[in-house]
Length: 185
Image (tube, rainbow, N blue to C red; front, side):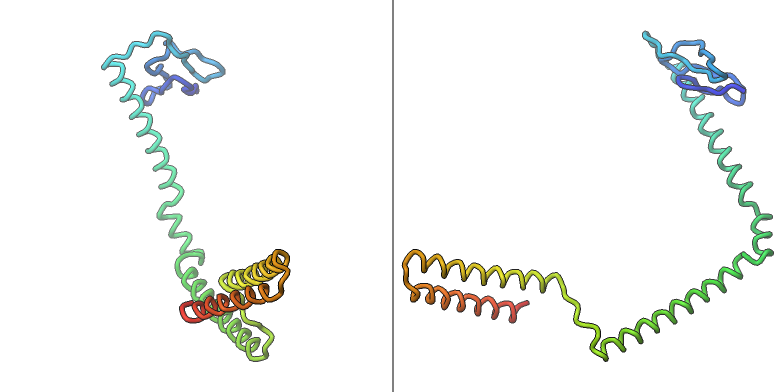
């Protein structure tokens, strides 16, 4: 049975193929596949468009009906009845679901008991957060900035008093930042 290839469409329930608008007729057959080549001078009129649309719609309806038939035969009421009678149907699914819920509850209980035991023995430390890492990184960078400013001040002025003044000023700024973080964070 030949199949319709590029540039062709099947006509109704027959084995005949028809060229689409813009393709040369008659279609050529290559190994039982009918194809058509693009027409260099296509003529599209309302009757050709209507005939093509009708052919396309019929083809789509045929494919939908084939898919519907395939689905309804695969899952028939007889199949569902055999499934229920074999013990793998709804009754067993409900009992399997309740078994899984019981397993989940027992696993949750075991996890909570193990977690409580680990916290009581002190083996499990407090978890670190990304926010704590960022704050720690900020204060380390602040300390490096303070040391850099002290060294720069000493190298320019050759006076340790100026370097210690910068250390005092940065300590006050550090205390203000710490206070703001403690109060509002």
